[in-house]
Image 1 (tube, rainbow over the protein chains, first blue to last red):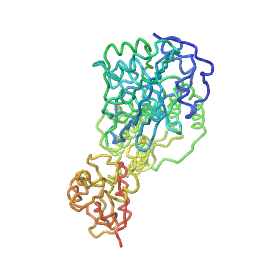
Image 2 (image 1 turned 120 degrees about the horizontal axis):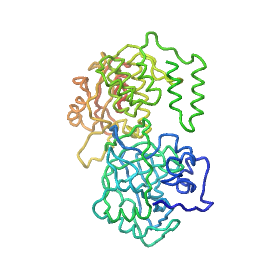
Image 3 (image 1 turned 60 degrees about the vertical axis):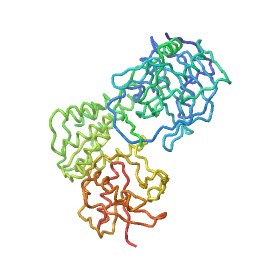
Image 4 (image 1 turned 45 degrees about the horizontal axis):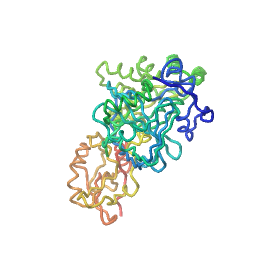
Amino acid sequence: MIRKHALAATMAIIGTATAASALQQSMSFGQNWSYSGSDGPNSWSSVSPACGAGMQSPIVISGTEPAVMHRLETLYRVTPVATHNDGRTVRQNYAPGSVLRVGNKIFVLKEFHFHTPAEHQVLNTTFPMEIQFTHQAMDGEMAIVSVLVTEGATNEAAEELLPNLPIEPEQGVNLPNVKINARDFMPQEKDYYRYMGSLSHPPCTPGVNWYVLKTPVEFSADQIKLVKGIVGTNNRPVQPRDNRIILDAQPQ
Amino acid sequence: MRSLNKQGMAITAKGAGFALSLLLVAACSSGPSGPKPTAGAKRAPTQVANALCEGRAADAVDMLSAEPLSGPVDRFFTALAMEKSGHPVSARKIYASLMTSGATDPVYLDCGSELLANGTVSSEAARRLALIAQDLRSLDVATARPQHLHEGLPTLDGGNGVSAVRPSSGFSSTPMSVFRPGSTSPLGRWFAHLESYKSYQSAQENKPTLEAKYPSLTGYIDQWEVNVAGGVVRLGVRLDDRADARRLCQQVKSNGDYCAVLDTSP
């Protein structure tokens, strides 16, 4: 179920995507696209040419190349619940001060959001849900950590957040006294697949560093059902590999 | 070849990139340009070249893998197809063996304005290795550690009993094929530095690991004690010829590992 609602005009930023504004655009890019129908993924390139320019996300993770790489260091702080339903997904915005460190690179955690079903596939395996953690470096470079979700035990961290997800589009929930930590939505083991892709929705900004964690986290069937009931089906179909390198990061 | 390239360019173009493609096709049609193929150069089979130039490198891999390949030219183009299909790490192994083999067969392949190969197999393999290393570094693979580690400084904490100071990022312990230069000598002035340790004992204990990684250097890895930050024992290969030492290090570094040519003279 996809809901389309007009966003405030001031929120609609249409223009040339620059690195510095890529994240802002990603969270507010127009209203003329959706995940199905005439303005579905096949027509996104008319909304933003980058969507049809290749090197896009998501992809099928296969044919990986092993390489020793830096660990992902998730130096996240707790943050108050501050969720927003933009009609296509629900985002938990993050207060400043939480960073992802990969070697010498530092990315600031901006938000995380949900996709049902998952956008990435690993070989032939599909997943019922994916959580994407969006980060941005000082120079505008973006990094997204993707956590795949399998159906299993109840996720305790999600129990704090899910009751506070805004059900209606354009609704937000701010609870200063309820704190969560994005790290709790990630697995302990942070081995990952690495490739260069794009935002997986318009404006499909290229040059995004993707880190897809190998280890999924578990959500209960009811928890997945709850998220899906709010965000609907919001996965972009997998995109061509376009001869890209997909690295299977080996720990140092 | 040129008409095939034009086709490749046209097929590659899509969406907003069409205008760019037209420009490239126009460039191809404007007459001969760029370096000429090395005399007697062997080109990739037409279908393979076509696939590579059209962005269908995976198809090229399939074509080249359909039959047993033994010649250095075929192996080079196989590695090139693997590299271009997003498998540079796999390609690197083939390139490394071709480089060390010293194969002199000339190869040539261009895709319009992009020159993919023009030289002997060994030299082109070395060039592709350098390009792969550059690509992988851009993805944070095998990034160099801070300079003080390259000097062999004992920066690891001593609490865990591990005394090894590995200058490189430790790309892989997989056996690596390197060509042993002829000027190796126990009294050689030039030292191809591979690793450093805080004690002689640690160096001796870890030498077999290093030899297992570089089988062709077994029996030639020497130690060199230096007074850096309290004393360091370096492991490497001594050579009489500086150029040989450089070539050896180039091979090691092409795998993403650390190697530095040092002058042992007082």
